Length: 243
Image 1 (cartoon, rainbow, N blue to C red):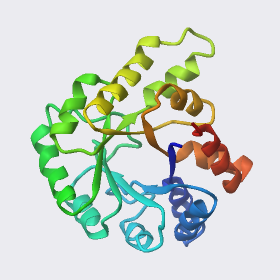
Image 2: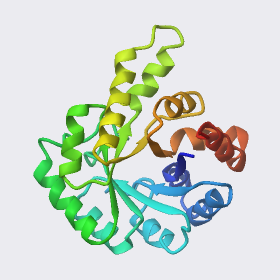
Image 3: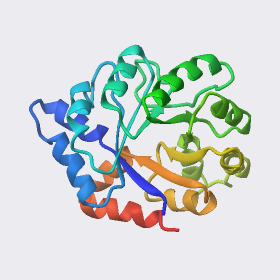
């Protein structure tokens, strides 16, 4: 079964909006694991508007599943990841002021930069995944840069899936995802996916891309938890990922 990693950033956004420690991010992570999550994802940004660097340090000894830290590999981010040594680091080409991730790496243009960054993480024994748009031309660059996995940026897929309710689905777009997944698998890269995946579109993606090892979901899952409760919501998402 494809693994579900819960991104807990939005819980931190809620905490920070009021100050104090409600909700308690450490307890949230432990509860997510207790409710069935296969991993915990955090994405600390330079302004610490949701997950703070200290949160990442505090979470490390508590997460018993898979700990995934994602973000742009600035010097501060790299220092944090190398100190924490999570199971996985996911590299995202976010500018500092980005509201959310909105594209993947150009593995050709940034090949030398990615090699240096990935090399440092691999030397520390950390598995490396890089955020990638659905483009077969970028897959080989991810491999030669040293990545272990790619994480497909699924924002365009989610938008197209939503529009498909009233318009013909853009089959070429989804073919790009399938072809990219196949190309990655053929050269030994494992496959993750994330961004705007939800209870409506996740099952279709899972069924048509059998190479999928892991999804990272935060915003939609937290929003659903308001209505369904956190434990029930995690189980609802896991049901979408059954083979």
